[in-house]
Image (tube, rainbow, N blue to C red):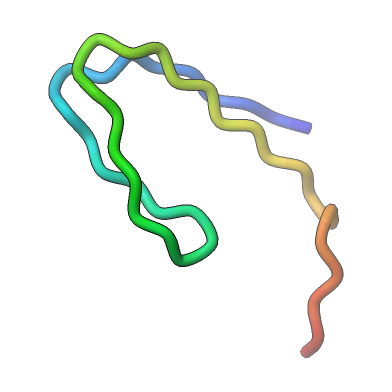
Length: 42
């Protein structure tokens, strides 16, 4: 698993599973990736 962390400099919109959400400025964010965690067809 790998991760990336940052702090927002200004308000930021993001999308998760089709839903658009937002976060304020100066908020710590951590994104984690888990390769092959979801089964996909293709």
